[in-house]
Image 1 (spheres, rainbow, N blue to C red):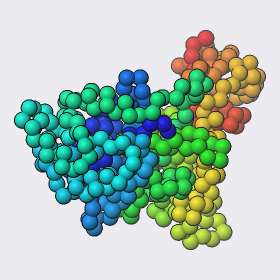
Image 2: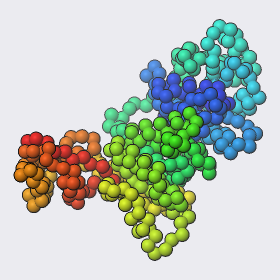
Image 3: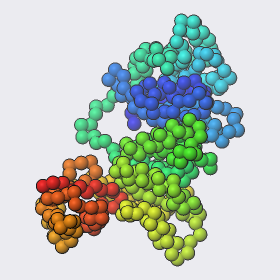
Image 4: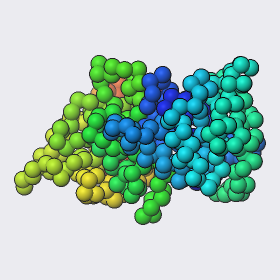
Length: 436
C-alpha cells in the first residue's frame, strides 16, 4: 500500500475518534474505557487529491503487566515500521504525562516525518494550554478537536505536503473479493489469518473477545488475491454484557453483510454448537458463500472414522443446505491452510458463475418433464421455460402457468437437481416460480 499514515499515542487521547473522522465512517470502536482499540485498524482517506491509508493503533503503554497491553505495544511498534508519516496524538486536557514522554522518546529515534497533534482543543483557552507540548522535542504541533473536526483541515494540508506524490491509478485495477473469517469467540480466527499471512498481524491470546474490530488485510500469495477480514467472535445476545462487545458483534455482522465469502471457523474441541449454527444461518440468510473450517483438529484424539462422523454430524445440523465444503485444519500446525484458501476461492468462483439460458433449459426441462410438480385440486402445473437471473448471487426463475400451486418440497427438489448438474458448492441459491 502507498502512503501509510499511522496514528499513535497513549490510551484514551482520541485516536480512534480522529481515525473515524479521517475515513469518514465509524469504523473503529470508540468508548470512554481506555484500551478499546487492540489491533492495528486500517482505513482509506483522501485529501486534496492525495489518497492514503490510515492505521489506528492501540494506546501505547510501557511497563504494564497486562497481556493485552504488551501486545498493543508491539502492534504500535509494527505500525510505526509500516508507516510513511506518523501522527502522534496527545490530550490538551491532561497535559504531558509520563506516558507521552515515553512515546515521544520512541518517536524521536524515528527518521520518518512525525507530526505532533494536540487533540481536544475546542476553545481559545486550550490553544494557550497547548504550548507546553513544545517540551516533547518534536517541533511544531497542530491543534485539533477530533470530536467536531476543528483544525483537522490545517493538519491534513500539512500532512499531504509531506506524503509522496500519488502513483497513477491502474484503470484495470479490480476490486478484491472480500473473505470474512467469522466464528464464535476463541475459535482461532486471528491465529488462522496470522498463519496465512506469515506475521502476527492480529493479537492472539487465550482470552475470548481479544479481537474487537472487523479488520481488512489485503492477501496476495500463492496466486490468490483477495481481502481477508478478521472479525470479533459473535456470541449470543444474552451473553453480550458490555456496550463494547455489542459494538464488536455488530461490526462482525456488518463484515458478513459486506463480504463475498464467509469462512466459518469452529473449535474442534467444542463441536458444532448452537452459536456456530446461528453464524452459519446469518451468512446463508445474507446469501454469502460459506466454507466451514474445523480448527484445532490437532487437539482431537482420532480413530478411523472420526473425520467422517464429525462431518456427518455437522451436515445433519445444516439441513437442508448441506452442500457446503467442510475442512479439518489447524492454524497452529498450518495443516490444510492452503487447501482452505483454494476452497474459499472455488466457492467465490461458484458464486459468480453464469449459466447460459439455452444450456440451462436443455438440462432442466427434461428433468421437470420426468418429475412434474404434483397436481393440486386437479390442476396441473406446466413449466415451459427457465433461466438464471442477472443478480450478484445465483437465482433461478421457472416460468409456469400456475406458480401458486408449486410448493416448497418441489422447490427443494429443483434446487437439488440444479446442484447435481452445476457446481454450486458452498453457495446459497434461490429458486422462483413465476407466471408465464
